Length: 167
Length: 103
Image (cartoon, rainbow over all chains, first blue to last red; front, side, top):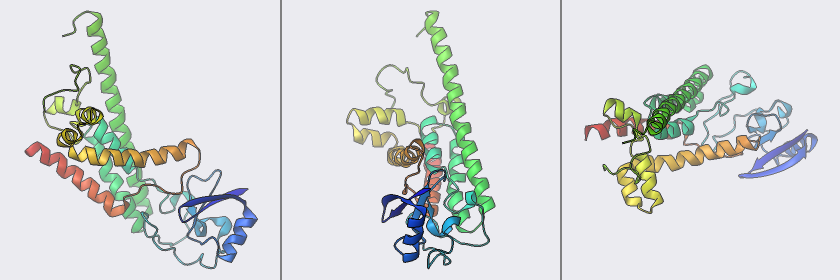
């Protein structure tokens, strides 16, 4: 299985698992460097990937805060889709939906989206997951209702045009 | 501000505004986009300063995610305003929404 890894914002690889393991042992790839292989939903710090747990000299210490990411706490083992930073906050989606669709629920979505990273930072994974879900639901509701209204609008528009009642 | 998008209003406009009479946070973005495309950036900012700043950012942030999703491998970086940045955006959005309806 080949892995990709990223150092200083550069994406490197693919390399074989043994090779990455060696790089991790030698410290060339730190526990905080992001790695990824086919099938993973997102990049993860090497120290949090089960295959490499314990391989890095620093794997047991919590990684320092990464730019734009949240301080990570490493309490009890969490399952892979509950890792901090892996819970999507849907912030950009909700902003685009709100600004483009003119739907008030878009704002609800943004408020939930804004809460996600803060809850993760506080270690409230269940709360963050719930907020993430709410953000997604409200964003979809805003987009769907806009599409529905647009569909009705164009149906009315077309039927008016067809019967020659335009203007 | 009453000028529509040039052609006489085939764009539907804001349904929220039609229904309630209040501006939504995104009101004016169609006109602002139209103005931007015609090089009238200043006019665009007057129509919706909030959207003119945030929409391009949001589209870039979303673009990065969609790009990663399309190629089946997320990019190792993303545009993330962080927990405080996100909160500030949410608060500014609400203040902007309420404020523009008061003025």
